[in-house]
Image 1 (cartoon, rainbow, N blue to C red):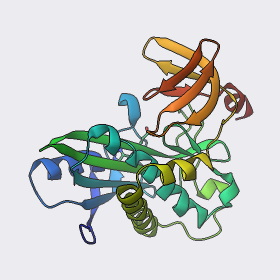
Image 2 (image 1 turned 120 degrees about the vertical axis):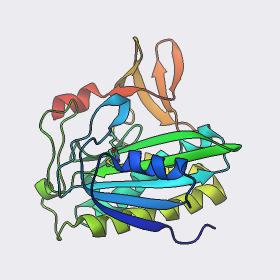
Image 3 (image 1 turned 45 degrees about the vertical axis):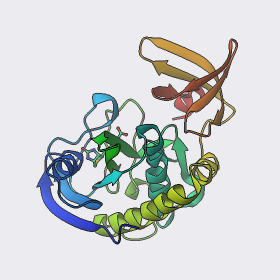
Length: 248
Ligand code: BTN
């Protein structure tokens, strides 16, 4: 085991993911975690920006892992599970759900996102795990409607440092389970809170849109769709649940 990872607390940074990448590239010790009160260039998935006002959680971990990149991508589920564990302390756990691949929803609206960025390292991967949680505010101009912990009536004080400590502890616990037992326990825990399971889904894969029913998460983390043309596995992409989008 690597020992307790260091946590670097910053006031302002372009992006905690970019900062973690610079630290990995400069050859310093890993694992580590960086958090910031504000980001001036927060990054989201698929080239989007991430709303980064003060009061929310902006956290990134840096790791060097001697594992193939395909396996390492499974840690995005560990991050989503860690965020859910943190939100459970402030909200009714029944309202905290996942949207594939690793969005965390509260009452059907996006409350947190995860961005993994990897690059080759020796025979393995230098990995950045970025976590953004809308603790006190949420943007109102996102494709998927967003919300915050406070907007959902948090039953305790919402504090970014305590939230970071909670997410890190839970992530490290899930990472240890993954290292010992593989992806299966993460898959099972994620499926228990998956939204849209058994419902119609559209997956946008580049210029192609695949329509089907969200039937499973496979042993590697791909979304399994039952379509008229048979089973399709989606490893990366954007999914839309028409039923959920109508409800929000
Ligand atoms: C998403 O689009 O859902 C992923 C959002 C990830 C945002 C976090 S905030 C901390 C870290 N630093 C970044 O620039 N992005 C991630």
